[in-house]
Length: 361
Picture 1 (cartoon, one colour):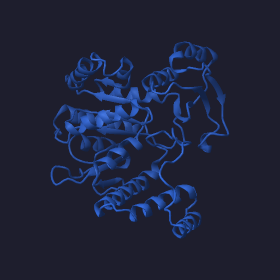
Picture 2 (tube, one colour):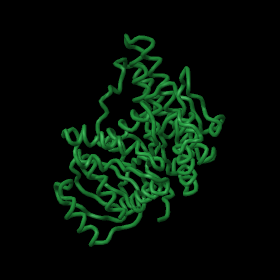
Picture 3 (cartoon, helix red, strand yellow):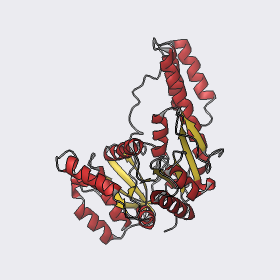
Picture 4 (tube, one colour):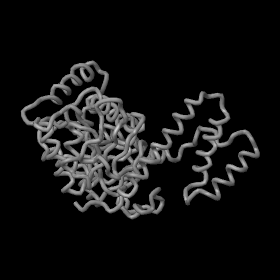
């Protein structure tokens, strides 16, 4: 399958809520200041939506006029600075699919997990993907080593110990130091098309649980989440048994939620799983409860009938249709793509992931 030349905008809602009203006040309550902000937003917006620019300006001035502590404003300012810097770094590569790799900073080059991480990332880079890591040692270093600097990003975190940029990404224009974990984690997910998890500690657990929580709740676009065990090891097998015993058997998650995770035992299999997910699927977006799934090539009538029969549980109106192109696509560059269109039962994102797998198969 030919890789798409243009990808959809990535964010943590897949633009799912783009038509909802903004709840933050868009004015300051000061008529003179509001008039000046309005003028600035419409004169100096760089071609962006004046309403969005005005919202940002108004929020900043509302915060400035508030009784908040200075530290609160400093956190807001640094957060915006970090998000802006990260977006600028990724922007030139926005139409290249990327894979985020998580894993322990303490794994040594002689260990099997390190060697496997080098192998996987080298394979991914050869297939045209770019690799995103935390920029530090261990598994992060292994993945940057395998992909090489040319196909690597490093999202490092400023810590008083342990975490320094590894030699394969240090000094690169695709390496950035973050002050806050939350902006760093946001960019791991905002920019990626797949996640590969190698064995790791608290940080890796945090990142995995946040990722599947965001996908499960529809706050992140669905993408492959692969748990990769080194040869002969059962780190993720034992982790998944814990999830099944303590969460699934207790009724705290559903059976289909387990479909959001895929355990693999080889770099080749993990890479094949990611490639299969994008065999035909391109992206999706919502308008209220209606989902539009962009695909690389149309499905046959037989395939559509099969989907209508098997996925009635997430299609309450039984209104699945296929159209070739839509001039009302929120991203005009993708308007000519084939697409599936139906009313989606919100909340069943694991079943939506199953449907995407069927589309690809």
